[in-house]
Image 1 (spheres, rainbow, N blue to C red):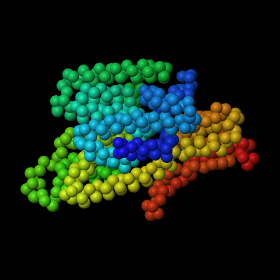
Image 2 (image 1 turned 135 degrees about the horizontal axis):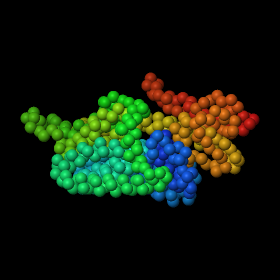
Image 3 (image 1 turned 90 degrees about the horizontal axis):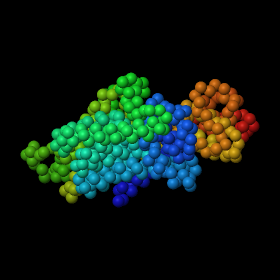
Length: 482
């Protein structure tokens, strides 16, 4: 359908415009690379750079399988885009399943509105092609939402159990309110719920322990170690904290934009009343059933999930992406209500168009800013392009932490004759021919390229401001000027 193609195209454009990945995405991206190109498991990237906590290979494996045929035709640099495109297709497929389920439950006009609301927002579509554990979990959550609407409680329990055990333990914070909803609505019995959940969890646990122990070459349950690190050791706060209200006062306004104004239209009967406002009497308003129970049934558990998640001090925007599809459902239902009453009054629908247009404009700004957020990846690509004539020579390149965290990956290592180092304790750089670094002044080296990063928005001039961040340095003996 045309509305689905719009969402698909927006996601593909975001991917094409920002093909590189930051440090949070690094493990899965490097794992996909190694699955595609490395035959010796001991040479996999995670043995040299294991990260703070281990992660599962069960997300990287299906993506690598989907992308593998393209590796026969494309270069390594192009394969990074192909790998992320494979993840985008998997994510989009899950999203489309939910969207079509929404169409069967709430009407085709609601499904079209759901596509439009999703397309004009930035963050959900942008992240759905990024190799984060959150996104692998989100794929299962989207399918679980669809099963929830299809009154398939056992499937909901299985999908959310798998997501919790394998990809993100904090999916349990979403799982709990949904389970309570299923129980109170008598869609599932307690014994059936426990039996299904335990069976699914143990099966998922056996799968992740078996597969990941083989890849890590020691017995482990990756997500179990993550939970231990974040909860028992309480280490997550070391990455920064935010106040309780942050998700509601900072993250959600950025995610939803002006489309947040559509939420009340779907959660209440306001969307149905506004087109008839000139003919509705006060007595009718007083007797109206203001809450839309069908929509609230799906949205309120998600709101409870965000409230529970807000208790944790360490907060990141991507942590609540699971809530966005259901919030967008409420907005889409509101738009559909106004659309159905458009013959009575057009002005409410014009307000909807304005809110979507403002949201889309904000997304354009976010898109331009995000494009300039991966200077390490851009600088790494520039190095290979500038020094293509030395592709067959035994060149040594060092990548510093700042460059590695902002886009450098093994997919960018284009020349097999070159040796690449990301060692963090280097003080003597005389053995290297080129440096990709945030440090401009390095004795014995000259700058051959500089890449800027997004810094801020100049409101007065209505423009994005950038600043130099990553430099490509060439050893003076290797410099083109030498």
